[in-house]
Length: 319
Image (cartoon, rainbow, N blue to C red; front, side, top):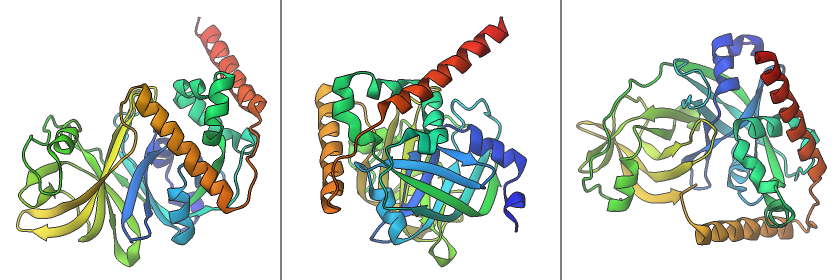
């Protein structure tokens, strides 16, 4: 199928409007792992562009080892498209071993982030933060070329939550955290080892987490829980990794470990996160014998200025 026929207008609208999507890559152990990401649908190229900091390079490492990926657009929060449904992209990704610091080189991605997440400006708001968090802006850019696009309806609204019951392999704290989410996103491997993603509602089971309403294949899998508000702030995320197996009631994820993403925390937690980011970024540079690149902050300021001018014009037109 030609690219111009692969993504229908309704699906393209979802790809362009949802603030985040779930991106699954394959880990070294062969387990598909998904994390929420923000990016840009480039309609002219029929590709989806996103990036990750050299302080969080695992997605890049996974893609360089195995380019098969999946993206699921399933959370409409903040998009204005509450009834638009879900769109699954499956295909291949490319991530060059090139650190990009020029904001003008991928201005559409940075503009998307700045518009969708106004609070992100705080990361570069003064000299101290720019010195501490410059590694966040040392980016590895990822381009996803879809080969299969699948439209799905939204999950029916439900008030059900995972009850505070014992789940093998999970602590009571993790069970309570899961109970705060109405659904999660299952990452599994399909035919030929291609990652797939599906939004599911977990239930407590004596073997783990029961996941009904999915045709996923048994094997190594993971379950992502994440959320954000209308301005892409107050983010929360974590992943339950385990083995997906069949049971009399359906597929059950038997947890083996939990990986934390973004969690609430005080000043000490923020300091620890920043130190970890800087340590991993420096390791990335050291392994390649690279000097610390400089960040052209004026280019980011120009992007912010263009957004502000557009907002002013829109406000004036509405009067």
